[in-house]
Length: 123
Image 1: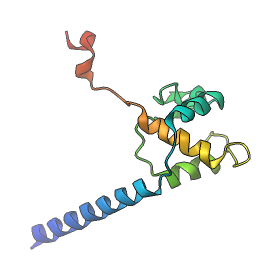
Image 2: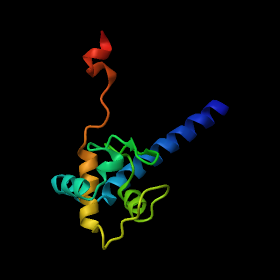
Image 3: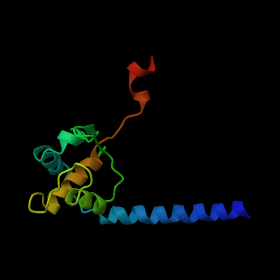
């Protein structure tokens, strides 16, 4: 009985995550990754998050942005009302369009490569 209950809970959780990820994808506005790259570099995002969104440690660990799984509304909220050391970027400083372009750019980044792709680490 406990195993059946556990399987039902897992099935419901998987269904919820599937629906939530589809909803997150719909919430993201269509952005221009090319312009997002320009804005990301011009506004200095790279100084903490790295040129390819790999994260860094300027004033402490800055999150990896490449291939973020954060939905756009949460991304926008973090930029507008950040936690930790990140400065706030109001809409007058960074438009919603530019923010959507930055989001498209970080989604386009390849992210971390598996260790197997580094020959020097596989000798």
